[in-house]
Amino acid sequence: LGLTACATPDQVPTGTTRAQVLDRDGAPLAVHKLPDGAERLEYQIGPFQQYAQMVDVDSCGRVLQEQSEHVKALFRRAQAHRLLDEYE
Image 1 (cartoon, one colour):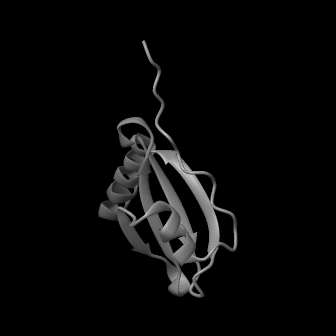
Image 2: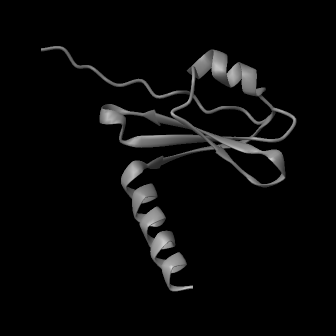
């Protein structure tokens, strides 16, 4: 029997250019607009794409931060925010 593993991208260093991220990881699943002209690049990673890698890029095209999170946790948080918005 052979063992296989799903590769996950290495952490993106702060200051990396947006173009370098795209060259390395390809087109993101989604791009989310953030305040001050920044944007969040969303990638699905891991076995069965269970994790989301979010890469925040400033308005000058440089990486501010990168974080990975389980998709179920992101979905639960989005549902909670939507419920709160409905009652405001």
